[in-house]
Image (cartoon, rainbow, N blue to C red; front, side, top):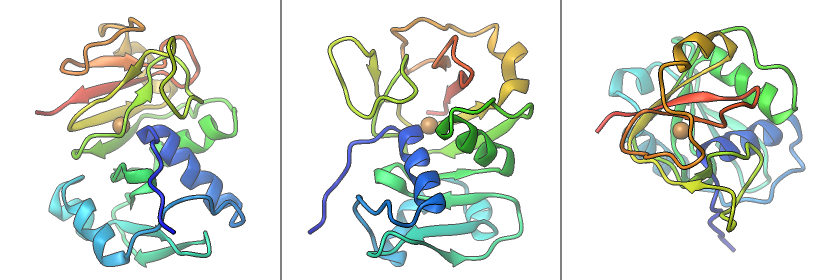
Length: 183
Ligand SMILES: [Cu+2]
């Protein structure tokens, strides 16, 4: 049976990180490698995708490489939020998921197809509640990692953000990051 999870881009990434770390964590929908490539086509520029490592989850819950890349990007579509993340961004995801310190790096993520929605204030929320400031962002890119701190200072960091404009997500947490709409 196939089930679609409503996950934020970041919750989805975390899920992927967990799946990578723990193959037994197989509680999600799977898509064919072909469909994955089609979805990823809309999530990042063609050239980036062509040279990226592409990961997909099999029915057994294990991640497998659909494509081995050489440009430092990893592309995947956990929970219906296709994305391509660079190396530092993948480290950031891991830190967030394991509640560790955010890497002192700048990471970058393409999400040109948008996300499934996320809490703007709770990094660990997986669905909308009355008070978790759920927000859905269209085509965007993300700047992550603790080296982004100074850059984030000039952007709105309100709990209720306008996703049509650049804003800081998860402000005040170690995992605050910049959301930049591109359309
Ligand atoms: Cu995103």
